[in-house]
Length: 146
Image (cartoon, rainbow, N blue to C red; front, side, top):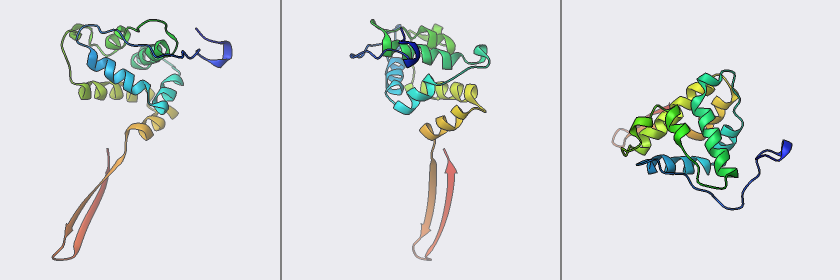
């Protein structure tokens, strides 16, 4: 349901996600990502040169649009299918591993596009390691990406 060139019609109440079995970890992550304005903007703005190589992006777009405009709970089957997890829906998984899988797939799908930089600005940062010897008044600092 869209309103012409204005994009999807925003519902006034939130809608949930269907549980496929033991997929509450997926639903929790999808809801969390959906409520990150910059990430929602990134997903909504994705365009595809090769739809067959963009399954995770397309799945997230469809689920997010359903959350935004749907009238009943949204299925996440398209997302579990895109990630090759259909067989595991009755087994609780680790949400951190699932997030890593989603981000790795998205990262490869948006590589070389402006969306890649936007994704890095949302999820990546820098870490500085500092070793200080108080007795010798010497310190060593190293910064790395994460």
